[in-house]
Length: 207
Image (cartoon, rainbow, N blue to C red; front, side, top):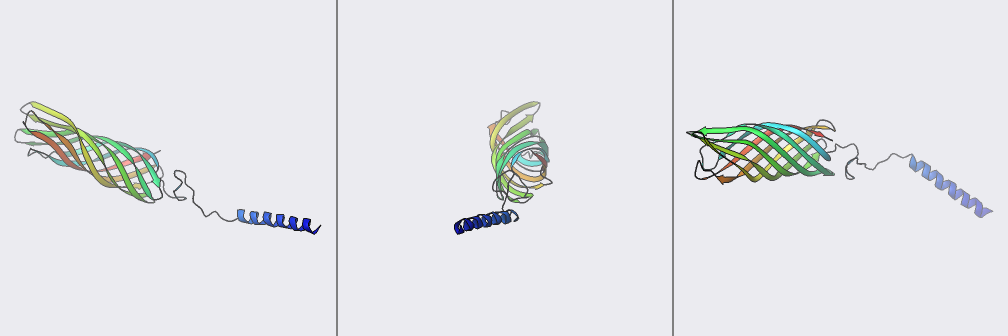
């Protein structure tokens, strides 16, 4: 009989301990987007779509022209997040008013685009990042009514900061250095290429 009483007491004690443990506050972490993201932290993970507007300035190799002007376009990307580290891919395309005339020569950059990797560090809703990858775009030359254009691929590198306004909307400021590869232009008889910097601001909607 004593063995039955001891066993019953042990079961009751185990049940009481479990009930008390269930009442304790949860001190772990939970992540709606990634298992490594702390509870209540701003999430950068997932797809996004947005627009940008900025100013580009640069120079054409083998020419005295320095095309500059307003540029604007759209971007889309996807982020992954592990703790405070954020990395992802982004693509964008923009039209520009960058042009310049020297003597009888005129060069312009009607449009350009990039496909880049991004890697950064999140201070909750502030993301600071570096970026780099492929760039492509058109360089157009004109002289005495004749024109010659070329679409080339090159590279880009830059950095930026993005601020989360809420879980869906963010604003960013970004600088890119872009080098579009060169081509031989019949109107100049030499190889011309366009290198430029662009400083722009933008907004993103995160799905």
